[in-house]
Length: 78
Image (cartoon, rainbow, N blue to C red; front, side, top):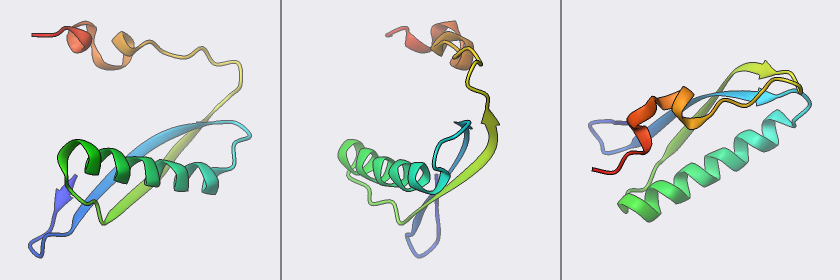
């Protein structure tokens, strides 16, 4: 997330989407969800959420685990 000098908050998300999904509809849903989540958790209004679809994942591709995505200690509470 970035904040400009005039206080505008922008988020850029880079996503892989499953083959066959409606890209515009999914992008709009993600934009709404990100704006709501950031506001609910941080009381910060996000002005712009840019969704960058960087690839399409075939149907039969196995889903990665959270540990594969973020590392083993990601879920550890300290």
